[in-house]
Structures are given as structure tokens and as C-alpha cells.
Amino acid sequence: MEVVEVMSIIMDAKLVLARIERAHEPKKQCLIGLDAYYVTLLERARLPGSTLFPNRCLTKELLADMAVQTPDLQFTACRSVGVYFGKFRELGTVPWRTPGANGWQFGRLITLRQAWELQMGGWNWPNANQDWTWNPHNR
Image (tube, rainbow, N blue to C red; front, side, top):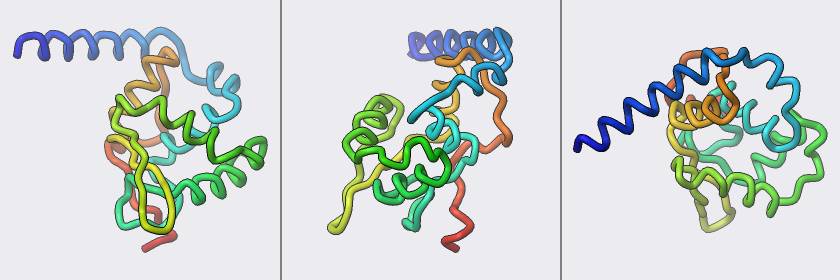
């Protein structure tokens, strides 16, 4: 049990250092491709689509939202989306299937945001949400 606590302290220290290291604005301008769309999802704290769970969405809904939010990605293949989001399996993002379509179940928002902060050397989020919120267009 001590190892988990120590790793948690190390993770917290890395997050603090990453937040202090540099501001997010210069990095944000450099984001391209699926990274740009992914950070849009993290900043909005809600996923596109109309599922019964706020942390799930169908791949076709991701692709439609991607074309609107990040026009450079309007011709992105489903396979590319699968490869990209497959990188986040260790953070709880896993494929999710229904009888009619495939989709993604995302990990906790706070976990995904912390991992992004570590990767990018800090980030300022527009809200303090720790979990995914419902899409207001679906309620």
C-alpha cells in the first residue's frame, strides 16, 4: 500500500511542476490534428452524441463533431480515430460497442486532464469539472 501512496505523491509533484513549468497558450497554438480535437473535448468536458452515459460516444458522432470543431479533420478515417484514442487505454478510454455501432468509453475526465498536463507541461482548463457532463443538446 505504501507504493501506491508514494506513486500518488510523485504524480502530484509532477503535476504541480508541469503546471508551473510553462503557460498553456504557446502550446495550444501548436496543436494540430487529433491532438487539437482531443483537447477540445477535454476543455468542453462533454462528449458529442446522444448516449445514456456522459462518458460514452459513438465513433460516427465523434467524426461528425470533429468535422465541425476542427475542419482540418473532416476527412479523418474511423481507423485513425481508433488508433489515436487507443493510446489512452491505460487511462480508461476503451472501445465500446452497441448492436448498431461502435464507440468509445472515456476514462474519468480528471485523469485524462492530468495526463494531458503532464504531457504538455501544464494546461489551464476553462472549468473545474472532474467528470464528463451531459451534452445539453440531448436532454
